[in-house]
Amino acid sequence: MMLRTLLGASLLALSLSTVAETRQGVQFDHGFFSAGYDWIDVEGADFDGTVAAEIGARWTLNDLLLLEAGLSGIFDSQTDTLEDNTGSYQLSINSWDFLLGIQYRHWFAEQLAGYVRLGALVYNMEIELDEAFYDLKPAGSDSASDNGFGFYGAVGVTYQLNPGWSMSSELLFKRRLDFLGDSSKPFDVDSTGFSIGLRHSF
Amino acid sequence: MPEILGRILAVVTLGCVLSACYSGSSDSLREPVALEGFSATVQADLPAGAQVINVAASFYKDGRKQPLVGGDIIEAESDRDAVILRSLENLSGNYRSQLQTDDPAAGVTFTIVHDPEAARADRWYPVDELLVDPGPGELVGLSTGVSFPDPLVLDAPIGNELYTDRSQDIVLTWATSPTTEQIRLSTVQTCYSGDRSVQWGTSAILGATDTGTHTLNLGALIPATNFINSVTNFIDQLSLIIVSSIIEAYSFGLIRPQQIEIETFQLDHCTVSLTIFREISNDLGAGISGGYAIGSTSDTVTVRFQP
Image (cartoon, rainbow over all chains, first blue to last red; front, side, top):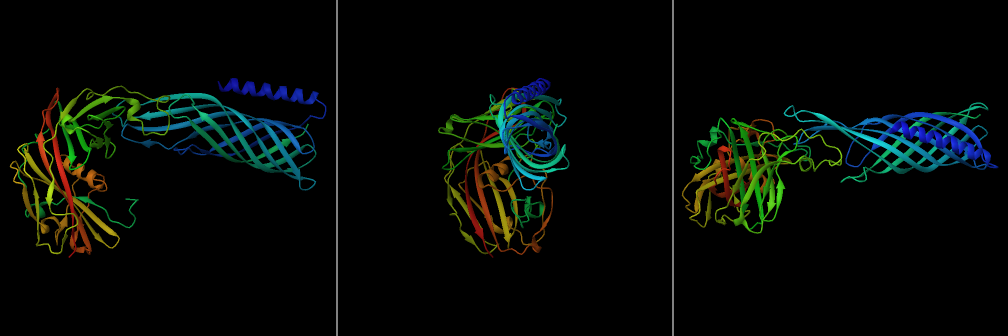
């Protein structure tokens, strides 16, 4: 399922690139990659933070706005092992997120710009449960996955290193809405991440 | 306890020091747990004037208390309510809850069922989507019922009555009933010293005859010297568990053993909650060969001691 999402996102990004470049005034601007750390927030649960990465591309719409598409995810964020009358349990989350949105960019100086990103995301998320019963009954695992929508927003700065490369640093918030929406307790999965990245203009 | 900062909190019962001063009769209703097969110790109590039944239960196999895990739960059902009993402490095997009733004559039925989703209902994630079900345990299917005696209402003492000397007597009175098989007194003492507090409990059988009155000396409940010894296992103290539920005492059975040297405790004042239970025994369900099923009605009064 995750491979399918990754493939779909790549194809969509390629299509956007092709469509954008064929339209007058919309041109490919740069590709980007960033890595950082995400804090995961789920109401009622306490998940560990996790390393995060994002890869994507942007196309110029005009001097201030860029169209962007990217792929990022949550990689094995876990809860502590909790205990109750029934047993002990630990959950972990993995998610792929395809992001599509707009970036507003403002140049403060010749090499320094600030930006704001806003957009929608499509997620494919899996949650795994490991449960044990105090060695009185056999332990086991279960998992469930779901696709859904969400949104994201980010603020950051970018510094032009040379005509081809620039560095960026940003704070990115993502909300994945209504995970396991057909279940008895659907929930949102938020992540707030700080990242440092590189951009390359072709 | 983290929620009661600055307090010393202990759940203890008086040991031999106090039992010399205050002794009860032997328990004629509580049969011992069988060393082979399944046993149950079950109590349902209906406090005076309430429509809420306090229930507590433990189940045993071959004389050993059994924690229920993996989806096995004790359900208690009245005429208008059904609840899952929750453990005071994971793996303790002591379970309790409260349930509503409109008609106490209908009694309460305790049943062990395997309901993996209900057992995990308090968890934050959707257990209908994420569930490891290890299957039912051996105790699933055991069931026993409890009915209640006539209501018991205390006429004296009045609530918040003030006592100032350990030599004073507390005289409890209530209307007698022919349905009584046994009268039990359970107490919870909470003593305060500034922002510190210490709490302990006692439980004793007063007898099979319902005299309608009982007198006890305050000094038997609140000693002036010596240690108050803790108890680690409330194996036969379901009444105390129920009392703790009634008066929201902090956490019977959860506190590690410790000794409180009462003479080093600069006592400001104490509250003493006194609960009289009118108890009857009930037949145990099929497949249960030991233990007891007690139905009781009760009334609680809290008095103050300020030396």
